[in-house]
Length: 359
Image 1: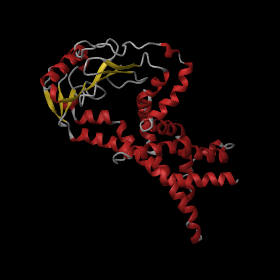
Image 2: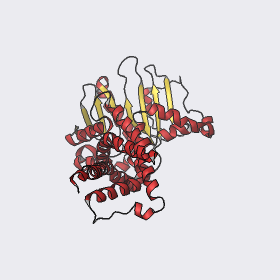
Image 3: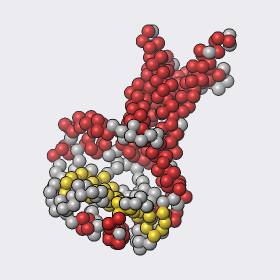
Image 4: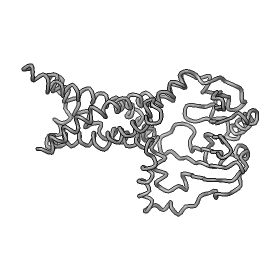
């Protein structure tokens, strides 16, 4: 009995503090789920081209190389078609972003306000827009939500309704305000426990990925993949321009990050599927120094299980790993924290303060 009272207090105060942050993350995350479709619909001139499926990988790389050579001293990043983006866009050292046709290299325009809006939305989702410490606030609240708020709520639900499951998920619409808020709170909390748990766990990864990766390594002891060798050895010679002339046989080039200074390296990021598909996210990354020597190479096919798991945090968090139904579930689940926050506060208010007025 005493333990239950402690858990109730813990659940209450954690909900008041962590709940508002979870609500902000949930709402911004729900909006971002449909970012590809919305930005593509609002920016067809920047992001869409006719018959993208008929443009070969060789043509994409040739266009990218030509664009790079035209202004190579000013290029910071090149992004090839991926997700909703069917065009090529280049970020220059002065911060300017221009979009180009993937086959003929024609300039299509600059970054639009709607594209910038979703970039800002993602920044709020991940950091609340607070420099440096914002991501730790969001990541920390996600872990508290995952480890304590959800689990304490499930404990309280289970203790009360373990022998009456139907009552535990039933909402009586014609009840007083206190009981109605309680019904909504305990029902949604239970029904969305698992998706919220997964979203909170995967969300914490983007802040504390170093610790997650160390934890994931526990599964490598049973992984046969540990014996797989990298396809490219560190120290191998690689002409950077050759990577833009010869397509990879298994992966599509997604992005190139050019060195910022004399000590920096080239980064080539690849993806198995250019556009959104359900299933595992398979990636590859290659780092080459300015002397054309390979520094590091990772590939889903040869990575240990721990790194393969880490690569799935993004599609799991957005629900894309389960296709359209997964994205819809994440979209709906994103509204649940704010509902739980409001109903929890209202239930507490009606329970505590209305008694003082004899009602």
